[in-house]
Image (cartoon, rainbow, N blue to C red; front, side, top):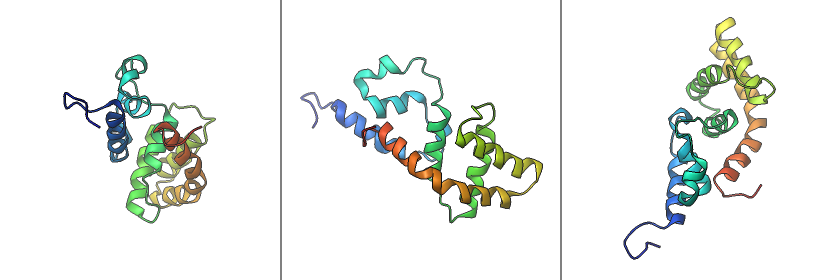
Length: 145
């Protein structure tokens, strides 16, 4: 409900941010402060969003990309493969998302095979999507940890 001055309530702002966040196709385009707005609401924005130009953690960026990949579309999986191969570099190699990124990078760069990269993603991503989906829902406040 809008306040007396016609200004959106904190809950409305947070709901709007959540819906907008889900509509952004490329996680690289999502500033960290926007994720904080969706997760914490506008009251805590100043408390959690400094510095303003920081990227979200790799697992969050991976989740935002992976949740949107249509595994039936070769082109969509190929786009994800190219993003993942570059984004995983210099991240924590103990993370399964990063391990997949290195495998995909090997397929693309060392073997020169987009088809093999697509195959590896199609084999690996389904088992990774359930926890990614839960993490994203938790981040957006739709599910309790």
